[in-house]
Length: 144
Image (cartoon, rainbow, N blue to C red):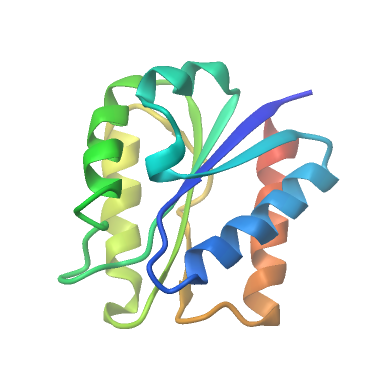
């Protein structure tokens, strides 16, 4: 059984809602899944304990990752992403999801085995978006 960590930051609850749907899909596919708010994860050394990593963060400010907690964690984690299966997700309210494109490019540059191009949802996830989240979780788990 594959072990997956879903590590996220949320401001309005949208990314948490996405994380829960992703967890449901991954568990349904047979994975052992743990969900963490980024500040409760316990440090990047713990990343090695998982077969796959799923990171969630909304677009903030000028199409960037949240800068107080998530960005510092992700920047530190980047040194451990080489050859690691990784998926990205998050929500945005403006900018058409450009932050996800740059985040995906950055993650590929870290040598991660990026699954897809990242799942970006505009504003609060509706039923269709939640179904896409569940599918992402299931497909990612099946790929491990």
